Length: 373
Image 1 (tube, rainbow, N blue to C red):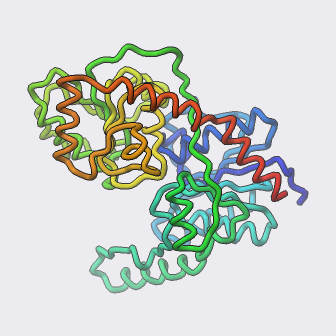
Image 2: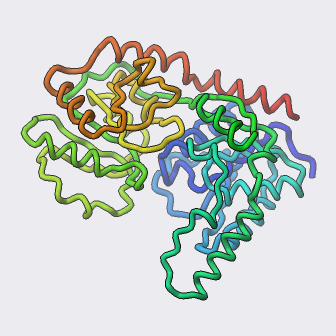
Image 3: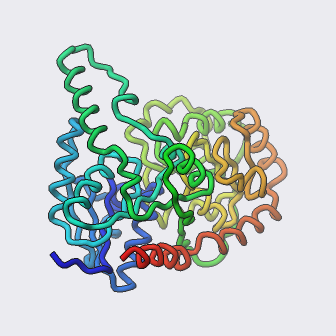
């Protein structure tokens, strides 16, 4: 099959119509920009209900695979769906080794090429399903099936990052770690962001948290924080997919605390724009879109544990709490009592305008692709 050199397929578990996390947003922005540039664009994602239909582009060909708890079945489902695609380039931005592995084998047989973009810092080290599987079953047969499944898939997905023609890191930390632990060279291309919000929004007395309620994001820390400020008039707002965990957090007594759940991108940006401060309690990220959204909207950033390329602790584009919940409490107390540092916010805004420009970043990616054609 003769394939168009200017064709690309985005391969990841979820599309922007379902989840508005970092990988989904970045792939969505790239896909829309490549459509504008006349490229043929495809998307391969898991079959799931569409929560945000406004992000479906009729110019994009979507392919859906069925997910299975048995990894080898999902692997085969992905591989056979890839056979129906027609792109020359395949863009993997996900920590799903399963998808990268299936894509690796497809590229081998089809003669296509891959861009592997790291999704988070954990990807710098070599990982395996068999080592990470914490078996909860007591049934010996099920345990053996799962171990066999993990071992087989580990074998199939091995070295999928090394086989990619182009490897992209989000930060210099990722670039150094990937080279150190897996001997894979990469190019740093920052995340991109389009604000979509005109003008500067007047700030309100709001402390906001944005993310999904996965364990690694530690939403409970923000809830505990809100409870410590029950006497404050500040609103404590949480936005993101709760995974139906709301009942776990009904103990929060602060009357100004509210979980808004999953919102579309524009509504999320509007909340960030009017908040005085955004808090990150995540223990690990790649380069969080929340950070970029904070800087772009002149909202003070407070991070408990994540400090990409030391941009917060050393360069001062926010306040770093050094993994201390108590320091986080005192920082928020200071913001409530005396306000935010406007100089820090303005510097962060200027930094974001120069560093996360979509046009500049996609030009850099396209140059890498053209050099490998």
